[in-house]
Length: 111
Image 1 (cartoon, rainbow, N blue to C red):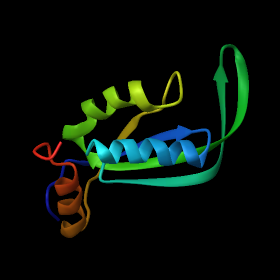
Image 2 (cartoon, rainbow, N blue to C red; image 1 turned 45 degrees about the vertical axis):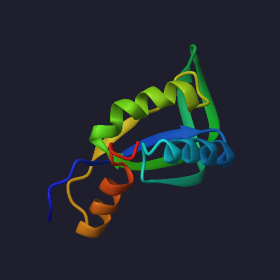
Image 3 (cartoon, rainbow, N blue to C red; image 1 turned 90 degrees about the vertical axis):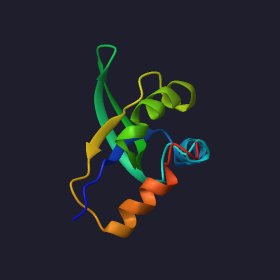
Image 4 (cartoon, rainbow, N blue to C red; image 1 turned 120 degrees about the horizontal axis):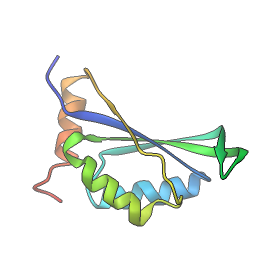
């Protein structure tokens, strides 16, 4: 398998519509190659001293580690949450064609 700096970034938003808006903006900036929406998630977490129980949409973003700082900065402007989840998970392997596609779509030269 080819070496890669591909990552999958995990975040959540309240609705699928918010997720679509976020993904489209990130695609326009070439910060991600793809975003996948997984509506119907239920998140339980502690917030301001209370336990919250909320419906959310999981968003999986496929990009490269080289774009992570730009993605973090974009979240400051684009993400609807005050404290957005941004967890970057390394990709250890993938098909050469898919990894090349991620590289091409997130090329710094095109940004």
